[in-house]
Length: 247
Image (cartoon, rainbow, N blue to C red; front, side):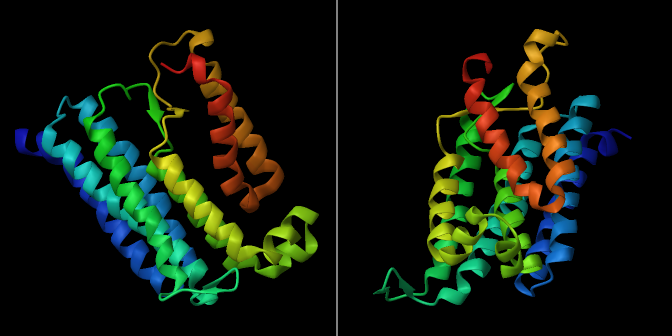
């Protein structure tokens, strides 16, 4: 019985890893629907492994290391692969400059910085009730959300939407390049980000979380699928507003 209690959370973490592996394979194959399902499953399992460990009082250093290793695949490799796929059509040229390698490999910069972020997080004892930098699951939602929209709606989104959307599609290579750099920096930035962990149940202590939750729901209701990456942009924006209250 103690064996099950001590290892149930670890088994859930390994489920996260398995889901991430399956998602990565289907992303390579161009099956974005299955990858989306795998990411959602990994997000759920990533939440519940910590919840179960705390509930059973089975927290351990092994569990901490396993969690980061699983996240490295589900929320480190997958967003890097997603950017790789988005940059693939552009070959080895950017701004008229021919590079000695295809720029699609530049997408793995996200994977490298995800790894760095996870290592920093494991050593940082301050991030109990907030994140320092964009957490890897949120970054994965942002990057894969863009990838999913591009491959689901294609240029139709740009043609039927706003001037901003058309501008992005007309300058897609630079947009993706900029997103890669911004995403990589955000992962290890000193910016405090809201974490849905409650230090107390006092309303004034949870204004940032409530603002995030209400805003995210409204964005998804209004924009539906297109709102998925927008929620992460809103998350970054609202975190910047409440910087002084995050501690």
